[in-house]
Length: 158
Image 1 (tube, rainbow, N blue to C red):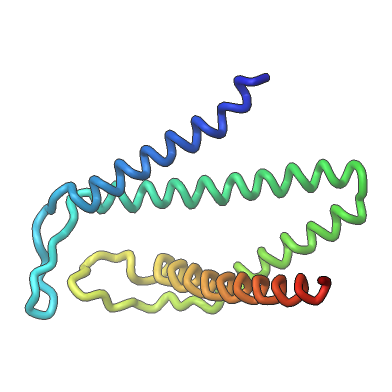
Image 2: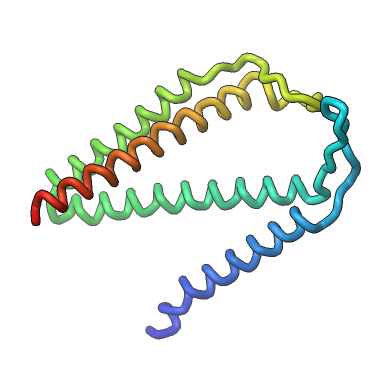
């Protein structure tokens, strides 16, 4: 049984190590040229794609893990207390609705990026970027509000 307790520690160490290696490659791994922007020359990091892909993998992993834990907890709770499980499902549905609203707020119009000539700044990717920004703003505001409410509520209980 002790071997199973080491899995999270080993996983964390491996992910941290890979994250540090990828970050070091990005920041000190050299450049693959430069780009002229408004008269200034900016270096283009050699490992930009690796850095972005690593971040995409981490975000996707967190989303999948979170979804898996929510489903697992729902099934576990539903067996014991169905009403409580349904209430937790309402929170998940609310979060999905928030994502849909943020998607609808996003715009598929072209985003002007100095020096960028690709096609990832228009259409689906532009709308996805907008939706992620709106979602980040809303969740950050909700986190700050929850922290403030928690402090006030805790002090009131004392």
